[in-house]
Length: 328
Ligand code: BEZ
Image (cartoon, rainbow, N blue to C red; front, side, top):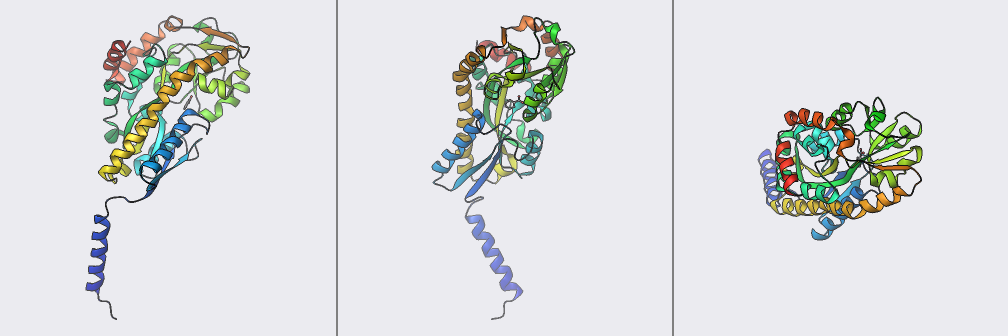
């Protein structure tokens, strides 16, 4: 039988109509990237999200989780999310703040007075409202916040006052709000990704690190240090992200199911840290290092200096501070 151009065009149009009738997206395995190692709270939450999505979608959708920077560093993953090459990520708000400076407001020193307060701030309408600009500004949909607790300082040598940190190379997560804080205390902040931290402290490439109690304990960052300063000086939020391009191709039903489930598992990390931070802290009290609890007074004028800089860079800072006050 001879097939004419007209037949071919008709068949192509009919196939197209069938695909449209089937809806924007059928079964899919979503790829979710993160930088944290497999045993980390975020990685476990990502896996639990994947398991529940597979169950609730009757096996139609699944999530392949790529931990430990398998898909690149966070800057690279954010780029992949923008193009749609990556579907999802659990990412530090730190990285997002490099693209969307307003997110730097979350790093206001002592915004949260403790881990429970941090969770309440991250669950507030003010915080959630700050996600609204992400599709336009970063090409991603933010479903909600999680956390890696509060930040501490682990140092080689004794630290009796903030002057002891002056000029010291302190490892920081690479983002401006943290850089400005350590510059304000007169240290030499050294941006460095997570996998490089243990060796850098072990071989003296840095004198101290900015870190949370989970990783100080679990990855034994204290082993090549003398002092653990329990300073709780900053929150360290995480955000669950979906590529805006990928999101646009989902059916309304899938949008609702995926957003709800991802938000639930991202949010679960807030409870995990609230529950486990005292345990990790207690463990660290017993590792034979000098431990000190310090508060805002330890950092002197640096906090005011940070606030003055970031009041300009992060328009949401006053509203977030007001919310934090209300939630105390
Ligand atoms: C860090 O850069 O210190 C970090 C990143 C992700 C999770 C926890 C800590």
